[in-house]
Length: 80
Length: 80
Length: 145
Length: 145
Image (tube, rainbow over all chains, first blue to last red; front, side, top):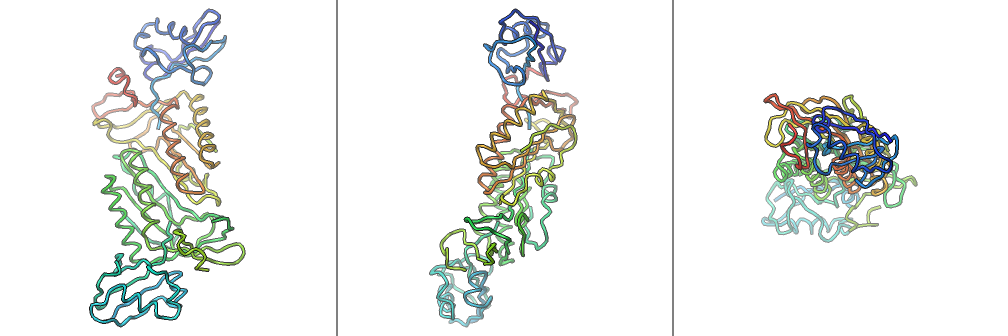
């Protein structure tokens, strides 16, 4: 299945891109997707457990992904 | 000595006036002045210990008045 | 730092602009307005009056106390007097502060002190045609009609 | 109730007017602005960016939570994105409430939740020409340059 991963702010900087199309095995979780992202150049600069969201909602690493999901890796937020 | 007493809001209503010139003995206190006001028609409707001020500053009953002081009897405040 | 009594409508946006400063990351504007209900009675308007010289003196004292206690010079209060209609602003307090916690704390301090000690009074007009001096202390409730 | 992301300058007085209601005796406007100093460094401007769809969703959720928790429908948030100069408003929160304690508590709730969970980021520009992503958590301090 295919999942789109979005990167923002400092995380987009370290990976040099703002989105990645990931091809994952059926049943893959948010943590699995993160491991794939971490294997990319610059991915080792992500913190061990960044905030993640699936389809605009914060999600845990154990969350099972579905084909077409929008995954986001969320740097420390700094609004206001 | 002479002291001007100012009345406001509900206290002006019960005494039917907004200021009173009081003639007091030398050494008279705020409490003495209040007793004079309370003896006027309607003065018995003032509470036992209203807030008082002398020359724009809150004052106790024991405060000694001076000739020309501006005394004020202050109803419960309701600003804001 | 400024405190003023006025009979004109309050320009609350101007107060916020007055306290704005590049050293401050937070600004808070508190606006007190005339409510259509009080203690279950339908209110049609409020008339504010004051011992003006003392009220301005106390308001200035509160501004200075807030500035010292919360470490900001950017504090302004205006209070309106006269006959106000529903929804009109009776008081506005603008604070700017380097940090938001200081801005909230200073704003709350100013309004609580203003309500506690500034000699201002209000007479509410009710839908049934009566008017009554408001006594927030409740000490003389029912005495002033 | 409303929450919005915008790239235009915030019209904070309009937000206050938007929440005004005759049933409310208190209105509070919180404005976050760009400070000229942060952590001892001279700041010359801030660039805000966001995961816009999720940020608006979280802001709407916060507005609804505040409305339920503090019993008022009169809650509006706007957050600006893009390059902001010193003193410009990045966020504005307007609350009207029947009573001032509810207005203060709701306002504080909204800004704290916004800072805790809305996916918005800021990159400060400093007087020495450098830029840095701000990490209020401090977890990655020094990592992002």
